[in-house]
Amino acid sequence: MTPILHRTLAGTAARLLSVARSGRLSILAFHHIPPEPTGYPADDPDAATFEALMTVLRDGFSPLPLDEAARRLGAGTLPPRAFCVTFDDGYADNLTVAWPILQRLGIPATVFVATGYLDGGIMWNDRVIAAVRSCPGEHLDLSDLGLGVYALGDRAQRARLTETVLGSIKYRPVPEREALAREIGARYAPHLTSPMLTRAQLKELHAAGMAIGGHTVTHPILAETDDAQARAEMAANKEELEGLLGERLRVFAYPNGKPGVDFLPIHSDMARDLGYEAAVTTQRGVSTPATDPFRLRRFSPWERTPLRFGLRLLLNMRQAD
Image 1: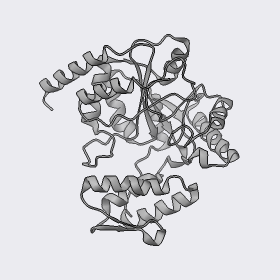
Image 2: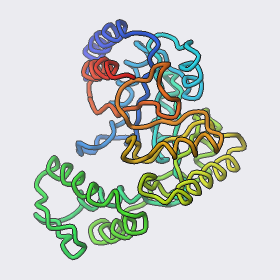
Image 3: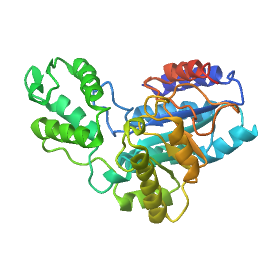
Image 4: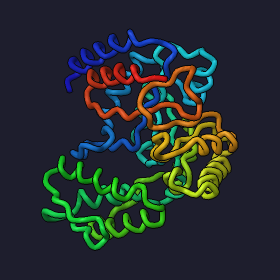
């Protein structure tokens, strides 16, 4: 994109965003930000695209740290067009790629860390994604695992297939989910290296100003997990992160995050009992003062141009409590 076109689109988006109503909090969810385009449609934006999108936010919105935004939302003191940036899981490029961009633009952010994958871990979904991308030939044969045979096709078809395979595994018990993902990864992406933060990098990211939130140890679907185990996952994650960082965690993200599907009211109660002040979901829309602070809305913006991104934010603002 040329600088002139970028400024034109960013300016148009900023003007559109300027009419958005105040008293509403937009929370954006990302995972990892690759330094270069991968050519894979389902990925988060690459560094250049991410910077262009964040520039729209800087020019048209009011950036806030998530914990502060949650408190001000309840108190009714949010600035106009308040927004927060968040990242899930704990990818190393949150430190090496995303954070330098956010620092240049003066935008705070929070990363929700699943501690079981620090220091060399690989999340189950990353194993599956890499396998579908790397699988040679025209078919992905998982019939012996009870998952069927799939036609691969081009990149777009592989991206859609990835969602299908992930969906067939996601809600299985954690040990079964991990075993299937490891087997699929071993077959088709055996040389995959960890994309996650190390504990040293996490401490560096925190020291540089990124806020850290809880996200369980092994990223289970809480609604499919025994209550005692769900609480243990949340408590152990919080305890380890607080010990590592030397401060109390204030915010939590439910793994996967769909209310009534991925987590239940009892898990919000657990988060309160553990001392969290707020928790985020993946329910689309914006939060208002009427929103339960343990069910804050959040969405992932997949648009790749500033104008489309600005329009998506406006549409998202129509969805509120």
